[in-house]
Image (cartoon, rainbow, N blue to C red; front, side):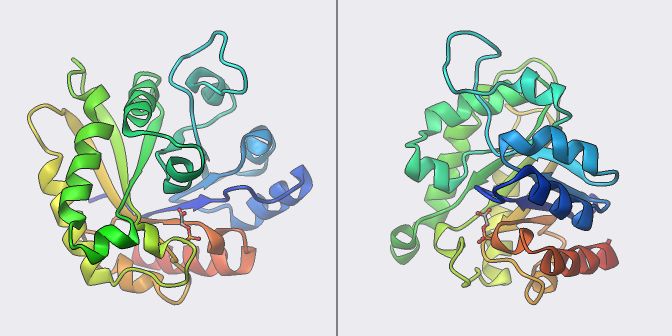
Length: 246
Ligand code: PGA
């Protein structure tokens, strides 16, 4: 079984390289991934010894005339091993579609970066009780770029992040997340995908008080932490709990 992985999504924080390095040093820990903003990647890489480095986004072409974009080979050269793809904030504010996301997943896999693909339903979809259909559709579209790859995909992380739980302080009930994680598992080991290590994690208002309630389930193989990951003391507590379970 995989060790539980704790991924810190710093989003648009902090402001300076110094703050980023200070925070990274304080939360450097086994089985964790730190995803700082692009300008801090190299400095954070230099500051960590145990954590792995992740990015928050990627472009699907490796190079060329694409102003403002950052490619997989560039990320790899900075020491990045993981990349968050399809976060709901990018789907919403940057209008990222499933089509773009599927190209990004493919670019990550082809360049041997581990994608952390984020999926999850809106509050309206939850109210309409169409969570299963939404998750199924997102997986179908977002993984369509890697469906026919001829080689085995070593690692893929799916982060189930119900949108209504992100940044709200109202997490999903762990039992509800477990049900969706089981569904994701049944949808992915499909003959069209050769994935040797699939890890399904939960994200949305995870903190040091509720993390144990998620990680105690085998189906929840880690968490994606936003707000609580930029508070060193709080994130240290989260890591301590996760490492005790590991
Ligand atoms: P949150 O964010 O922990 O602040 O809810 C999680 C995420 O957006 O990945």
